Every structure is written in C-alpha cells, then in structure tokens.
Length: 380
Image (cartoon, rainbow, N blue to C red):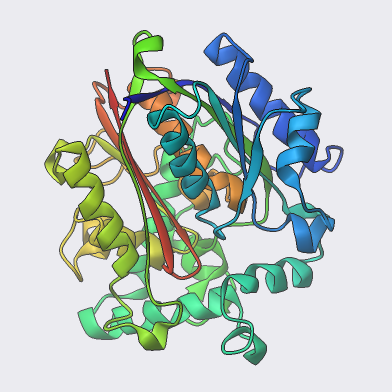
C-alpha cells in the first residue's frame, strides 16, 4: 500500500449562501483545493453529502459535481453517512490512492441547509435514525441527544454549566477563524440562558443551520513535497439504536475507530497535538473527548471546563470553532475538520495557529454515534 498525502485543501465560509446553488458551493471549494495543490488533474472524485435528496430533490451528486468542475468522464461517487459523510468519503479516497487504483483524488463535501424551512431541516436530519422505530415518534435529533446528556449529569454529578462549557470553549477558539459561521465568544451565562431545545440542552449548545463546502486533494506522498501525510483513517459502526448498546454514555464506534487509528498510526493519545471533534451538541463533544481516550469517562466535562482544550493548552480542541461555532454543514463537516488539521500542521492556520503542531486527529459521527470516522494526520 502506498503512503497518502494531502496535496491541497479548500473551503467556503460557512453561512447561509442564498445566492449560490449546491454545485456552486462545491465548485468554489474544489477550485480552491486545485489551486492549493497546484493541479486540477484528477482521476477520481468522491462527493459527501447528507441532505441533497430531501432538501434540493437532487441525486447523482458525483456526476453533477464532476460536470460542474468540467471533469465529466472522471469516475465519481456520492458518499452518505449522515454527519460522518465527509470523514467516510475521505476514508474511501485514501483507499483509492493507497491501493494504486487512483493517483490524484478529490474528496469534496457540500451541504445547503438554508434551502429548507426549519421544520423540513429538522425532519431531514432525523433521517439519520430508524424511521420505523425512532423517528416516527416525532423525536428530534436534539431530543435524542438529550438522553445521554441527562444521564451523564445524573451518573457523574455534572452540572448543566459543566457540560455547556464545551460550547463556550468552541466559541473561544473560533475567534479569528476566517471561515467560521459564528467567530465570536459566547459566555457561559449566555449559553445557559438561551432557550431550551430539549431539556437539558440549550439552544446555544447546538450547532446551527449553515451552508458550506470543503475539499481536499489526495496524492501519493512521494509526489507531494513538505506534505501532510495520512497516518491513519478508520471507520466504525455501533448499534443503530441506543437501546441496543451496553451503555449509551460510551460511543462504541468512536472507541473502535480511535483504537484502530492509533494502532495503524503507531501513535498514542500522548502524541496528538490537536483534535477536531464532533460537537453538534455540547454533550457529544464531551463524550467524544472521553471515547477518543483524552479524558477518563465522566471527567470530560470538567476537563473542558478546566481550560484544557483552548488554544495553547494541553489538548487544543476544535481550533477553528468546531461544529458549534465554525458551523456544521453536515456532509461537508468532516472535510472541514480534516482541512483544518492540515492548515495547523502546515503552519497556515493564521490567528488559530497551534505552535509546533505535528500530529492532529479529526473525528466525525453519523447519527448518535452509530457511525464514526477517525483520521490521524502528521507532518512529514
């Protein structure tokens, strides 16, 4: 198997892009990745997306985006794994290059959530859960997240303020991020005073609705000078139902994907300089930190509240704001995370830069931990 490196990255700013279509957003990010890589020649294309079918009535995104880039004829496919779509598409792109099947692959993710009314977006996001067993009850995605959130507080004695600090820290790290949707601080008082979405989750503990696209170019490492190498990429799944898990406060897919990634990379948590984790709600950020092995079970909230995840601290986390503050354009989110790690390792993160970063990890989840993708990157 060949070593794989990231040759270029590109983003759009996360916001409500009323004047742009899905293909326009994708093309903008892809062209930036081409420029960054110094080439637009590709022999493979993977497109990650979650909601184009229900919100835009659009299928066949692989062919559509190839056409938008003037690359008709290139093998292309769409990858859908809910909010883990970007990480899973990246996994597939790495396999294509590592195997020798392709020499230059573009992996791009795109989502345009502002095309739907709030109730349409909420119903579409609930499609990540079983429609016959779970979603028919009317429970929302945030409502599902409220179950582990409440149990975490009860089992470990954490307060609402303890858990909400994850959102506060993400906003602190978003300041200075050029592509963040909400690049400003949010105080703890402001977060816990915001309206309740699903008790005990407040509105400002939840990622908002946003449009965006992110893209990365993958090539054999020997062809990319001064490259950021893919040390490991893994994907794992867990029971689709919370009721089928041994413990709803442990996301088995995150555990499994992380353990395999550390083994493949020959690294431990102590070697990781920064992480980008899935914080679509504050409790998911806390549980992700724990299940990735960076904090003991039940200690994640206090670890974050203690300031350990801010820039310059022990474990800089969500260094451009994470899903909460950078934004969460679902199918593109995993690629934003990976691209942000690349910028950090190359010293191109601007105001968000972590000094001397050599190893970074990105983790994205589909559903409530039913799918997880973990990527570890290191500076060559």
